[in-house]
Image (cartoon, rainbow, N blue to C red; front, side, top):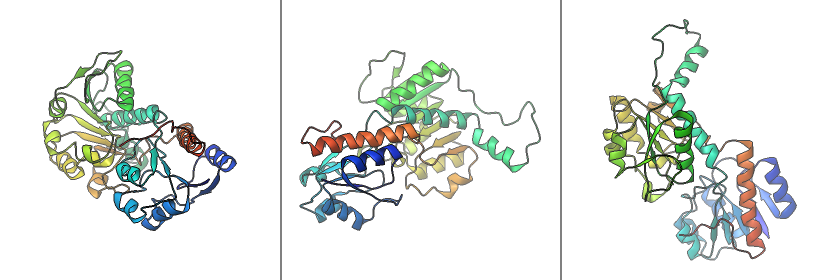
Length: 318
């Protein structure tokens, strides 16, 4: 069985792939081109793609009888793969849930704290050589402990964020989700997203990407937030209407934002780059050696199951 991995991987992942499969590992770090996606479907039995490899319905339509029968996605999010179109052409899809939970929750807290306490702005001040020393009103930010946080989406990652907020910082947790969750800590279930946004100091976005959540955080939600509130997004960039966010920040309708993802990633609007009240990270959610290795090994577990005719451990269904 011939396997293609579309990005370089941590050493342990590449070593196992080379030991267990007839594998080619692409050296480029940019998303696949259209020609490369056609090559993926026609030249290999299984492919490990990742974020940015846009296997759309059009890509599958161009290859109606693909050799490839498995896209073992490297990542929990799979909104870049049209799962229905894949199924229609006989291609299975899997992902890597669980492995990313804690690392992504940690980045959410990094953004929340850095934005509230103006850490990025402060670091830039020190590096500039313009810092003139401590004084009582220097760079006053917002206190985090005891504040109210709203979590948009309470799946694995959302719950991990909520637990850190509650147990780590004594924050009051509220959330919106498809239904009420059974939790081991207090959390208020909000009637709707607007109601949640209007009553919290920090709004953290932790929903999957895709058509159903595109621009979920729009001008209406941002208008509902308190002028002292901050938005944190570790989900997918397109979940937030970036133009509406920029407008809300410029007008002072919200106090700040912490972003690890962007609507047109890797492009980041100049307006966001210029704002001191915005913390910007280069999609670091799962960026630890341990987590990326676990993700790769989980993807290979799915490839191994496919090769042996077993059920996929992490199958994605339409």
